[in-house]
Length: 407
Image 1 (cartoon, rainbow, N blue to C red):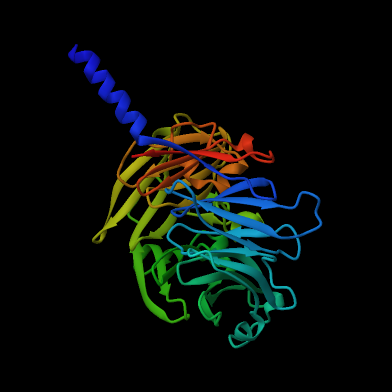
Image 2 (spheres, rainbow, N blue to C red):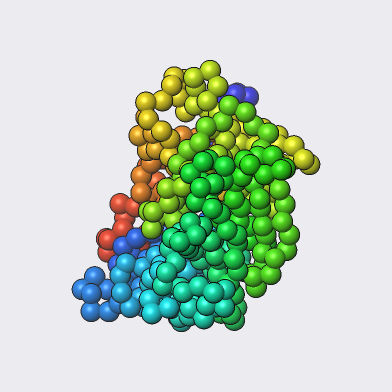
């Protein structure tokens, strides 16, 4: 009898923790769903006949109804969805590279307000002594305070790379530009330096870093932190004490410009990340003929290993390419190598890593990398539980059903 009562209690608890609800169909059919990490799921609907370019957005989260509804009208397709964990704004960019010096976009904030505008980058870049049309765009990122563009300039005569960043503030759309640093081509070819990388943000601190193995301080990262107004906050050298690590290629991963551009192929000695005020270091350890991805957290002046995953127990047949996308729960990676394309989540609390085959859909559903349940569904992790959605419902003339399961 006690066993029956216990099983009944467990069943009732499971029922209470799982809740299904519907989002009523609109006049236009829902055709897609994307994740705003930390906020919820964005249902997209539009006129299937193409007579209108309006795209309607419905935010779904922990409530049993939509949080808000909004719309925007992209002037052309495709548009580029730019989002980050802990950023209260997302952008729908109409162009990644400046067109006639301008970036055109629709900005959406967490309250559901949309702003359609354009911003000119040429004048602020010119103040640094460079022509915007001679720069190579490397990345576009949204932080909590600004939309950031990372550019690279190469002086063919001097054989020197110059790294530049611009910041467009969310509230008043003011633009600032900074020079991150210069790196000689010969230093990169010799393996003594790597190119600058955007490595993350925390509040109004936006961090870039380059790796050097030939400085007086030893091998490690020269990290520089700016605020959204382009004011340098501090510089710090983070020493790399790891051994048996291997150089690998990087690639764009996540809803950022590096992924959409598909041109990031820098060689790195490791991946530095700055997330929620902490520095993390990911290295590829090749000791004993294995390939092990190790995640370290800066603790004082030392790196403390907090998680790892063995990619291969034998020597690889080809090099590994790694992309990184930080989440609050884990640093997630796209791995391309002998095992094909995979996603890997290394959890910050040391929990068992999660590995999945890579599909393009994970770009717009980053929570899918860290939720092991219901793999056939679109999944969103939220503060009090996980939201699930069957994408087969899209493009039908029916209400959309969601399931929310409390943690």
